[in-house]
Length: 446
Image 1: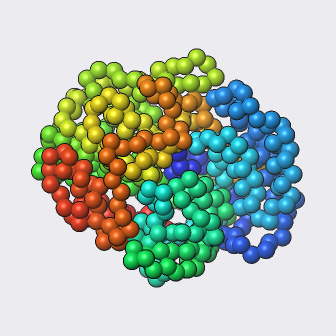
Image 2 (image 1 turned 60 degrees about the vertical axis):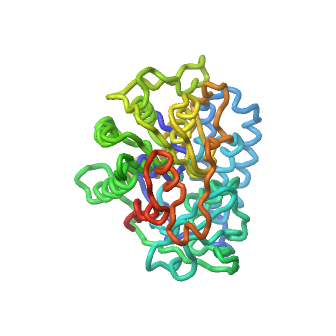
Image 3 (image 1 turned 180 degrees about the vertical axis):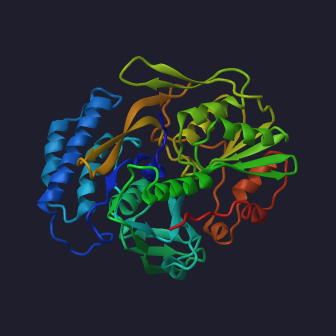
């Protein structure tokens, strides 16, 4: 299946088959650690070899960006011996792939023998990073607040440009049990906090060879919980339907069901804020619901001749007014959807500039071991996408027709002026305070 996910943690459940968790009891901290054992050095070395081979075989540009990859491999391989822990070892592999500066080419490390919940969610608004959610009852709940602006995260200045890399490293490659934050509250006061994550140990070895095992069903249950969060949540406000879509992972029956609701009204506000992308098929079906003729999404540019990427009419066309909401976390397929709506003059896009992470990629699972396996994966870009204006959205993003950003004070008060404005443009009426209560955040189970 072809995917357009930008965020490496979005598809974490899809890469597991048979796996063994790595030999680390808790997340690594910044304290000095001995270097990796020879066994772990050999394991990370093989992961680097696999990354090199995956690039050579699958990357869309046969010239691989004109980089001397043999020299780059030797340089990064030499750094493995200096790694103090697995997080640093995985960082070497991530750094190796980062030479392409490609949002959809990255390393998915093996699962760890723990689950970690920092107790908060962060988001980019404009060029700044804010606390957007805090889980009740956590250490974060005592120390940080929704609406706080994060000026430094573990001593790193954090802004739009660095946000994805920092989140990737600290939450996936090398999870931290404690993180230091420099914060500025909406009233302008500043403070420094050490925030402790909630760490839940899990089994070192899980058995996924049989659907009857408890390990298999536990993984499936957690995947289903993620799916529930990403399913659309339609709300009807007068003659306007609001649909909150958090991922492009719907099948035909899902789209049919939700579009049946949409067609009962004269206008739709489609909220793609925080939507990291998803399936190519879902993007085509959803776009096809708004046009009575085939629409070119983009040209796929890969190792072979460019191929058109087309959305054909799907179902009974919705002809009403369309307003699309985006933000700095809208990525990949959600960006393509918004830009096609702009280029075809089918609706209006409002909110914040999108992430600019728009390529097409395929996941390649890899493992080490025989009966007991360590499983990991690589996302490798197999096509660049040129829009009908001849431009790529990669590193550029979609600039809304109307830029509208919530403030830290809006976040703290749970107001949503962007959604309220979208409903107004669609011909309805919704107060920002009421808009902020429509889609409460659903925390995944630990």
